[in-house]
Image (tube, rainbow, N blue to C red):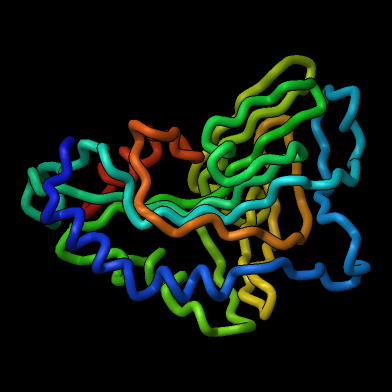
Length: 246
């Protein structure tokens, strides 16, 4: 779907006020409580059938990112018949994702990352939400959660989580699940003076990952599905749009 220039301009203006504050509030790292300042962040990883992680293993995490996308361009999403809104209206989709790996990469590389060795793993944990362009991103559930960039000590709990994970058990595996909560998945974000801290739990198929670690905020900006693959997958963005107003 082509986005008209006017729509893009309104979209940028809608997000402009909160983006600067978000980036300013999230520069720098935060030390995990109880750890020495120079201790690398880590997660406890267990993978059934894995030679490296068959038992709970503390693994240094070299990539820990928080990726917030106010809207994904190029997604042909519209309201469906039978919902609360008139059908056929254009929808935009936002997502917020924690991306974790034991391999080192930057924000751009994360969108095309692949496992290079059996001990590698990639975990994306977050949530997608659709909204009408006239509503604006700051008025969405995710927009409200991330708009108040100046509140140190504020905690954000994301619920109904989606997980996309790549790892090796007895063979290379991809695991994806949705609507996870409670004992299956947890993502609690805390805004500190140094940036964002995350309390994470993921249980999906053969993989269990758990721990607390600092996240680096990637640029909060619109992204295009033609230029990069959404970390939760394009199908989940479309599913969020299909659920809108139903």
